[in-house]
Image (tube, rainbow, N blue to C red; front, top):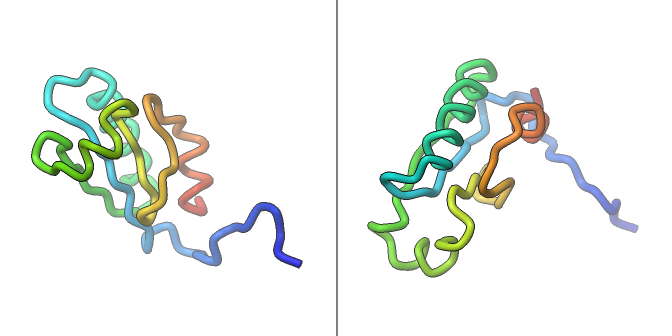
Length: 92
C-alpha cells in the first residue's frame, strides 16, 4: 500500500529547483521572490523566475494564482510563500 503522504527521497536541498511564476508589477510576486531568495540562499537550492506574460501556457494555467511557486516542477504554493514550509519542502 502506498503512503498517503510521500516525502521526497532528496537528502540535499541543493539538488532542488524552486520556480517562481509571476509577472512584472505584482507586489505579491515581489514578496514571494524575497522569501525564495532568502530560503534558497540558506539551503543552497537553485531558483528561477518565469513571467506569465511571456508564456501563453503558463498564463492559461496560473494567471489567477500568481505568484505560483513550484518545487522541482510541482506546485508548492501560490499567493504567499511560508518560509518554514518552503524549507521543509526543500528538505532543510
